[in-house]
Each structure stands twice: as structure tokens, then as C-alpha cells.
Length: 200
Length: 426
Image (cartoon, rainbow over all chains, first blue to last red; front, side, top):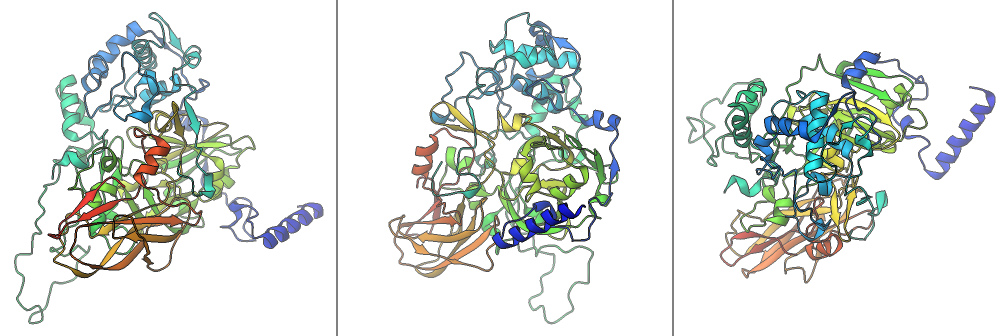
């Protein structure tokens, strides 16, 4: 640390002490003489990370190679999903409905009985791929191939009339799918960490 | 009471899973499920089973010898319910608790693909993404870091859903609000681990992912990771229970339970939220005007009287304590008011002991019941100034169909015969 940096640090500490603010929460748990790093743990290798790195972001990051169409997905759905979610995606309580037709207006706050399905409530198509890959089918998660996952994603989106028959979904086209509920979500608009009297 | 009456809407029981899987593949899919997921649900007996011999006078002969693990008196019956749910919930019997700590084996459960059986020697936490140094930590590595111990509640954001949607007079505090539990947690601040990995300046969110069969994942703002988030490995003085995330879980004080990812295996730092299913199509709160609220992390202030409450029966008029629990995800409880006349007048309850931020707080007030029918209720206020709303206020703000964060005032109707039943509307 240079003399100038030390001076800045000391000044910052004085300011923090005077105002009662925390200078840096990360330092609360550490002593003055603790090093910048304890050097604990091990470097995670690229291969190790790749084996775990299954998430798919709305921009498509994380989508694997492969593709599928609604028509291909019909068979995937029938073999892997229909037993719990119903032949037409109508749901078999307690297993949720995936498809609703006709699509209801986004009036979920008026009645909790309106089913929230892929086409009416999911804001991102990529989430469908992410979720099927990480969690479905319930009794055998992780068994669908990328092609099967794209296909069953396409099947659900087509059944919900979000995409047209014959649409090929892949790493490029899936993030382009605009979901009907895309603009319905607002980030927490309560009073934030400060709370307050408003009921929201 | 019927099991269905306190099952969350999307609970998936072993029976239902078998029905679905059997339809698909003759039940063969179940072969891969852990053994404990295949066991029959526990018997529903409510009668204590006393030991074979209870002496008339315990002072006349030596008692039992020492034993490796303690157990409750056989006269005590306090259990979670319902049982046998694979993607469901079991509720803490709030009416059986005293003080503020939830015994670890009564902490509520909520899991989306069963409780995984994890060998701690094979489990690691990987931190990667927008960091300078991708790192892997074992449980033993975490235990070498400076640790902190904090008392906090964890509450499912769907807590109170059945009481809101399908209320019944015959609901216990457990069935009304049993998806909240309060523990002493020990672990390493997330900030200490992020400091080791060195988050890049553009890292604004992190994904926390579990090692269960749905690899449950939630996006958390990086500032929470740098503030008070913990990766905990101990609960009430012992390693985490499997149902609470053994060998390690994320603990976000005051934040809805689902984001406190259990069986934590991976933290990935990114620029934006990852938009998993559990922060988009679930755990979002519909609002009037065709909108839905997402990333509603904090649990708002709430309280519930746990005695007198169904199924208690008052023996007659006279003095008795009204007691219950209050908590807020935004800070400390500063006061709890109790009404014994249906909300017309309110009186300050005594708050017992030290009040901790974002922790269950015990309140009580003596009440001289005159024997007439009435409604009793409690109302919590936290140090942000937030006052627990009535159900009318909550419905007005969020719409009758809203979901999650059901924190309205809870009431109990006391009748002249001493029976006490749940009263939904406040």
C-alpha cells in the first residue's frame, strides 16, 4: 500500500467511525492483520465448472448446441411429461397445468384460481429450457438430451400459441421468443430495506 | 384433521408421484429415489405412547441410565405435519413451542424434489462467473474461515396461503403459519468467500444453486452477498439437518425462505438476474393492474397468537396469558399490540427477553376472560415503522388473488364454551 493509499484508508476509517457507517461489510469479520486472502479452498478447474454450469440466462447464455421442433416435442412430452401434467398439459393436481387455452388476461390478482401457465405467466422462454434441464422429469431429472429439451420446450410454446408450428428452437432462436408475460413483472416496489408504513 | 387441509397447493406427495410415475413406466422411475422418500408417511397417531412402566413414585428407585442421544418425554407430542411430501411442505407446530428457538427436528420443511442424501466428503461449493479466482470449498475449508453465529427466522413466502385461500375454523397455528422457524445459525459470511474469489466490478448478481434433484436456483443481488448473507453449516449448535440443507446452505436474514438455497453447491456471479423458474413463474406476487412483483425478498412484519388457539379449549373465565410470536424480515419487532375485543381496542403486549433483528420474538399479555364470545388478535410493528395490516388492507393493496407474503393480522374466536377457532377475516 502506498503512503497515499494508506492516507485514503485512514481517512475513510475516520469518516466511517464518525458517521457510524460500515466502511466495507466484508471487513467486519476480519482482523486488522488478516491478509487480503486466506488462500483457503482450491482453484476450480474449467472442466469442473463446465460440469456444474447448467444455467440459461434470458440472453441465451448457457444454451447448448442442438435443436427441436414442436412436432418432435409432442412425442417427448407424451413419453416424459403427460403422466403428471396431463395429455393436454391441463395439469393433474397437485401437478401444475402447463397449458391453458384460451389464454386468460393477466388478471391474476383478481382470482388465485386462474391457472398460471407457460404462455400466460412465464416471462422468459429461456427459463423453460433452464427449468426442464435442471429439474424435469421429476422422477428422472437430467435424462433428456439437449435436442429433446429444445423439442419439448417448442411443443409447450406452440401449444400455448407463442410460436408457430414447425418453428425450430435452438440456442439462437429460443432467446428471441417474446413471451406474452414478458412486460408484466416489476421488481419489488415495496419500501425496500427501510420498510415503512405502506401496505404494498 | 384431513391431510389436505394443510398441504400447500403445489405439494406433491409420494402417492401422487407414484401415481404419475406408475402411469408412465409402471413405477420403475421411482427406483432412483432415495430410500427415505419411499417410506410410508408416518402414522398419524396423536396419542402419546408412554413407556412400558411409569412408576407411581419416581423417587423410590433409580431412573434410566445415560444414553447417546436425548429424546423428548414420551408424554410430549409435537410433530411436523403433513409428512410424506416429496415436493411439498411440512409445518412447524407453533402451538407446541415456547420461547423463540425452533427445535431443529421441528423446523418446517419445504423442498421441491425431496431431501437429498449428501456425503459431505463429496460435496463442495464452487464459486465462479465474474470473479478473478474461481474457487472450490469443502465443508472443512469453510470451517477454517472466521465464522459468525446469528439467530434468524426462515419463513416460506407462501406461509399462510392455506389460511388465506381455504380458511377453516379448525386450523391450528401450525396449519395457519407453520412455515416459519427460528434457529441459531453458524457459518461463514458470503462476503468473506467473495473476497477470496474477488468479484469483478461488473458482478451485480449471483446465482445460488442447490445439489438437490431440481438443482433449485435463485438470483441474489451481490450487495446482499456483501452485506449480511451467510453460508451456514450449523443450526442450533450441531451440523445442519438434511432437511435444512446439510452440509451447507445460503442464509439470507429476513428474506423469503426459497432464496435461502439449501444443499448449496454453486455460486455464479453475473451481471443480471438469471431468471430461474423460482423467481419468475413462482415466488412472484400478482398485483392489481396486470402486474406481478418479482424479487420481493423481505418478509414483512407478522405475528400470530399461538395460545389460546385451536384446538385449545379454555376451562373457564379468569386470568390467562395470551402469547405468540412476532417477526419481521426488515429488522426488529418494536411492539406487539393485542386486542381481545375484535380489534376495537388494542393494548401493548410484553415482549420477552432480548429482541433480535429478523428473528422470532415472543410476546405475551395477561387477559382476564369474562366468559363472553370474542375475537383475540395480535398486531406487530417493526423498527421501520411498518404495522402488520388487516386482511382487508392487504387485499386492497394486492388484490384478492395475490400470492405469497400473506402477513395479515390473524384472529382467534373464543366462544362461551371455551372453544377457540381460527378466524380468517380481519
